[in-house]
Image 1: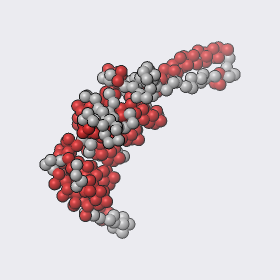
Image 2: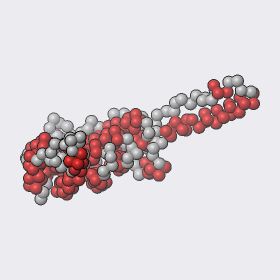
Image 3: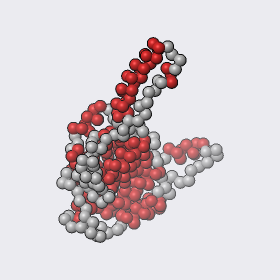
Length: 310
């Protein structure tokens, strides 16, 4: 079974400090070193999951069928993963968490074109990591990319039915995927309104992922348009506009409203050019309090997407 990175650096930490000490002091120091050395391996082994609490770690064990979480390219047992794969997402070491996210991408989607049996098993915890600000933003963005790939692959599998895609590639998804994805969409929705400073990139990517939930297009269009009015950051606002363009062709009741809205955004300069703070501080403060973003370039692209035939 694949496990957390092996413990390193368990060398006796107190060796230099014992130089020049008396025999009794040396003996005491050696006893202390022995106790420290005995716990070093356990500490290093636990380090990868240091950010995940005991309750969450227990859920990794009990709520996932780990027999399904395997490396598609490596035969079992060498390719079998265990709960430590999820634990590492919460690691305080960015490299450890980043590598775990990379592994999960491959485990869940293979080459990016399918949804593997592992995906429904770990999906709730991928979403939980995205929602948890204790997980590094870079890792959360990686996981959102994985969710977007899985959502697209799931949509392709549903559209393809039992036949191959162009080029002979087969898109597959396990029977458990649709229900798991539905729950993931519900869990991601609150993040659209999460105004925590520094999370604007996460909000934008959440909108991009939710735009793959085409079967809920009408509902999501209402949410995206409402959120746009309250979104304080331009980058996230632009992503909301692009998401509207992705969903509009799939909407039944809201398609025309979305197209009209995109046409407005394509010609609306928003709150205009930023005033010079040194010339007029009051005008600058009033400008800053507005959310009317100039998203014309993004709206033009989104409008073209909205008008395309399915």
